[in-house]
Length: 341
Image (cartoon, rainbow, N blue to C red; front, side):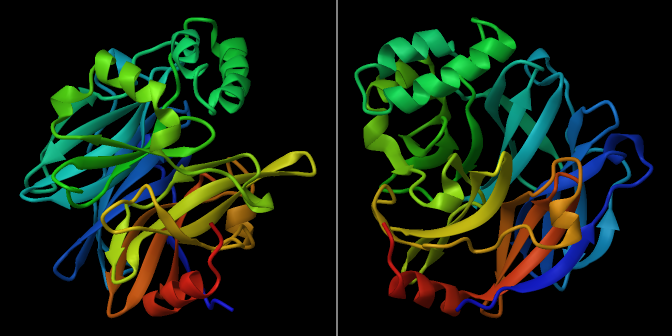
């Protein structure tokens, strides 16, 4: 049985306007002995921005900004910059995040050389309506599940709503010479490959959607993820392959419960799942995980490794940030021992 340790609450909301309702879903990256955390901050009017703090010894905050590092500036993100993930590739930091305009939730990204100054690079999602994308997806096996979410989002936001594409994170290195981007078009996790971000135009996505089944890496298969799955922390390269800590939603007794899951992907072909836990890695159990702005949520988005320990930073009930830890080797052994693909 896995022994995952509850390290407790790391960060809570403050009286500062930009984070007065909640802080959650952080991106984390380690440089030397310092962990840099970029977290989603929400104001009382439900506008999200990205805050920053510096962490020592994995859970001690030694510096925190009193204003957001990134905030809504453009029409496509006027209602929030949300749920960041961050990786370092070659000589640059890449932060992916969800841009929300009150109707459309799309993938955007920003880049930095120093983790201080970030340049927003714009939207990289498919700018297609659900109907437009649906006409393409009808030839795929994904169509029936996709159509379910199309009906939901068109009912709430109108027929012209763009396909929601969220939970994006890059692999921290190129795979066979190409960038690899995890993202989620409901209800599965997909991988998009490209040589340059400029390729991610409408024609690219139309061709991609025609082959969506080929790019699907994880689908909901267990009862604890019977609604949908989504990428969590950026994949971590290990001796056993890419370790993916992801989130999954369970619909149970009239409510939605978010869990953390774990899977292993093949090193050279991460579309191939080599192992997957049969049960959640962790679930909402503590009071701060069960009661908040959204109840029953653990939402892992950042992870670092230190002295053989895997530290997982996650949003708790969309209100605060907490931390779990587990011996990396123990998790890998459990995945290999109890393969469930």
